[in-house]
Image 1 (cartoon, helix red, strand yellow):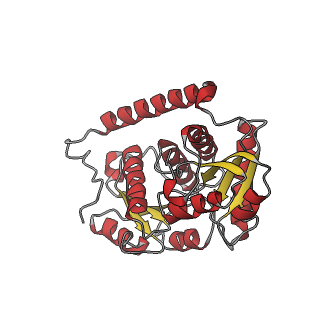
Image 2 (image 1 turned 120 degrees about the horizontal axis):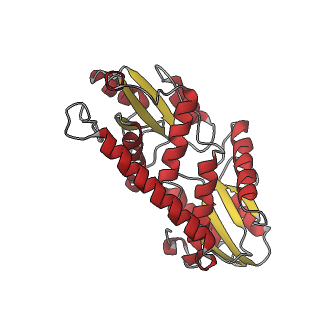
Image 3 (image 1 turned 45 degrees about the vertical axis):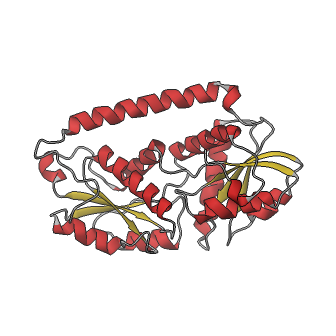
Length: 296
């Protein structure tokens, strides 16, 4: 196996302390930028614009409870901001119904999606275009972003990930970043970027894998686990790259030979990232047609 983010700390060609220092600087700079954006009203959308959280939807009842909890956390972080919820499918309220119920004026759609798949590129701008009474803007998907790595790391730690592992133990460790999968190669690239960022954070290889493999996202969770084991990484954790519980998250966790992290859920870093995407969407053009979506 040749992992996409091979760890080379034991050979000395890549020093983990340097990587950790680099990530610390990136995180510090990101926090400064987020604070600056929050303080700069000029970068925010119209203050009347509700934030419309767009979830995929799931038959798992825990999914709806999770996104509702995330919405409450967002409201707590920014009192006075109207936060609405709409689903692409499977759950009510559906996004089309949420948009239809809004009074005329601005609205910002923030997808609780982790990459640039067809839902982000077509479904969301399509729904916005069918609400001509709204001045809709569609924010970028949540991933990739360092705040997602914060949440993934925290979920792994909650599941028992040994942050204080020494070099000998690290040589036995690995992580599979389990995602849903998409036919869109850009979505696969976004997941791979997150895997690289998580590998740099943890200091061990992280392989992306998919619960619903496609040509663009071909590697399954069992295949990724086998690849890690072939390199002697027999203590492999499964990190859930899902915003909420559901069928795919449960399937991925069932393959874990050791620990399986919970989905991202209502983690505080996720709530901060949603607000960051909302703020950045203030500079996007109005969505008039699906093909005119501007990613911010």
